[in-house]
Length: 139
Image (cartoon, rainbow, N blue to C red; front, side, top):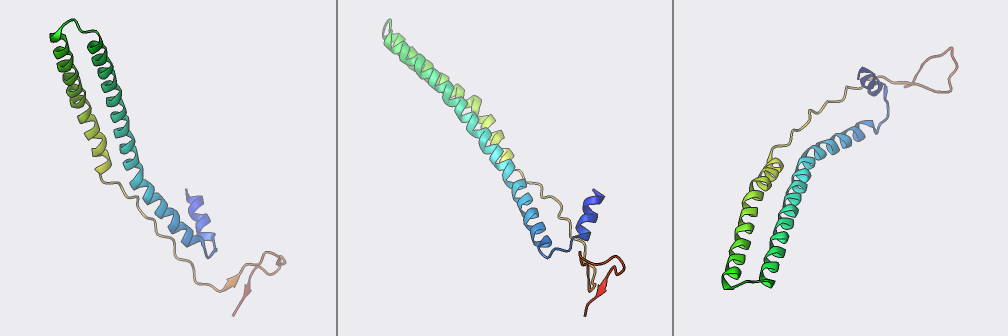
């Protein structure tokens, strides 16, 4: 951890602060959108499960309509269909609400670390210098 801080202190690129701010903004954006997208995915999975249960209820209802034993059987099939649909909605609603609630929770904003101040100096570090002169002063 200290090595990374030391490396940033030695970095003399002019673009380093700009890219650092861009990456911090991307992290803050991800910290906001990640819980929202996760909640949307959970709600969609709940809706898909509800749709599967309702499809099963409709297939059972159609089967009962195709093989009725009397007029009361058709009435019972309709009552059973609507009872099953309402029960499925009642079971799925709290889970969907819990998934949506996680999307509305406040996203935790990470602490922004300020960059260390660059030392004011007017020296150049040349890569092709000879070993005798370590620095050269410039005007």
